[in-house]
Amino acid sequence: MARGTGGAGTVAGAPKTAEHTGPEPVVRVSGARDIAHDLLVIPDQGVQLVPNIGIIGGRDALLVVDTGLGPRNAEQVLKFAADHARGRRLYLTTTHFHPEHAFGAQAFTGAATYLANRDQAADLATKGPGYLEMFRQLGASAARHLEGVRLVRPDIVYDRSYDLDLGGRVVHLRATGRAHSKGDQVVGVPDADVLFTGDLVEAGQFAIFPWFPPHDTDVSGTRWLAVTERLAARSPRVVVPGHGDIGGPQLLADTRDYLAALRDETWIRRDAAVGERTIADEITELMIRRHPRWTGREWIGRGVGCLCAEHVPSGTS
Image (cartoon, rainbow, N blue to C red):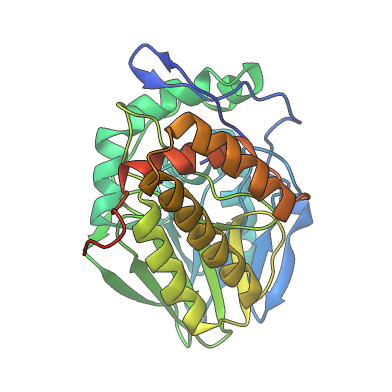
């Protein structure tokens, strides 16, 4: 999901986010940086609708993680990856189905083998068209980058886990189960102790809750918290978030702690029969005081809405 977008309402049956008013959502491959041997990240450079993109190399093959928004961005990523590969076989995977992460996959058709977990493939097929419509409504720049998008099915669809041997380096693709989306996937590089999280983790931003009832309610705050608890316990050396600066295990801890606080503060008020709107207002103010420099404040209220729907009354199991 896009960094720093939010809002309410619907457009022709699809949820609507706030208009994108930031810089053109262009992936800048010239900014790629090495974070380990034969492992690069093309950073988002703080631009909305641009994800952090991974390039993971082995002796025989190279894996690209996420595509950028639309085929034009993806074509630049593919060219960069192919130049870096120098004849090695190419693979593509996407952390989840949201447009800036996966809606450029068509550019890789015929050039790379596309892998994703089964739930993500289902998301692409069933929810992809609605999200394409929604993101086109963000503004002219987003619409331009989404021109000609064709949603493609992954070549290899796995259930829960897939170990991809690139030659001397095995990359772990792991479906996490429902959290930020139904089909979230993390990508681990054990020999470098690097973890790509997609939008399960952001740096310097409140967790993005795509809670758009009745159109999309797949996000789960409680399951998301459980996922980040598991990931934080692993404490990888390098964490590449979906958006924001690359960091270390503290990024996982920060997300875990925020989600736990959001749940606890929401459920305390829900137990006291406080209305959802009041809860959202109170917790938004509270979380901004705790994290005054974080962006994406519009997502706090959506997180409250999700956790209200998942509320377990105190004293029940």
